[in-house]
Length: 328
Image (cartoon, rainbow, N blue to C red; front, side, top):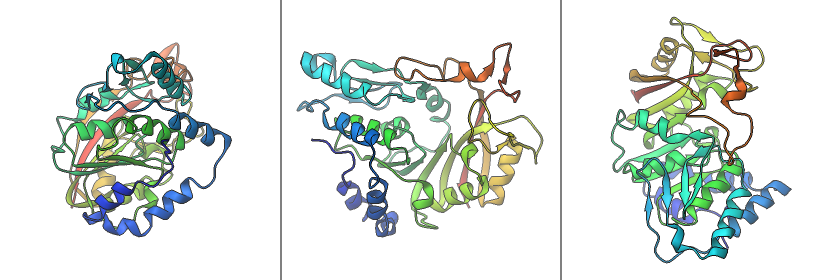
């Protein structure tokens, strides 16, 4: 039985041999606390993961392609294929992907491959690196980071549904050095200075204090380590940031949308060097859309139907930027 709330002992053993070893002073207790307050939803997610079909003795997989793919349809008997589909459907909505498990395509709301393709050739090679992915959702990009050669990838996200979804993938790849922990960045030790590369994608605009978030990201990095930051931005001069009165694109928890110039200024003030913007891309319905795996409000519901350059609240429509920098 696969219990996604169990302690990741192999990860603990691996961290003991890295600069992140002092994290072990608090990590087991924080994981235990994250899973301590159960609910009917969490129990249902645990059941979905626990009833995944058995792992075949030999499984082919690809982590370096647009679709994170495991196995082929002919590797599972019909009853196990139905069992797999039932477990996956019990964990809707799948917001990040795409995945293909034994022929079953999880066509998630977000095409994570498009974001990955915008940045993967512009960042420092991940080969041999210890990588942290902050706010990683169900871990789609964590698997892509491993596929790009990272020695070990640790994703953190406090949403237990996403942790359960991750473990549906991990169930078939138990020996891959990729883990997802039910934590927020505030639970990492101050000034850890342990990771070679840190990703923060789709998080900054949800932070009430974006400066504190940038400082926390800096503290996770070793000297000269690389930060890959992806966030919503707006057009504007240095010093300008949009602060929505209530909602932005239907979201309540959006606080600051800076201009790129403002974001670069913030990062420089926070102790980063070599700060540069490598991409600005409007979010399109190709990249974010409802599917049968995530059939709820999506981009189409959040933009002005008569003027797609605006959100329904009258703000500029979603524009995402990728900023790369190094810890000074």
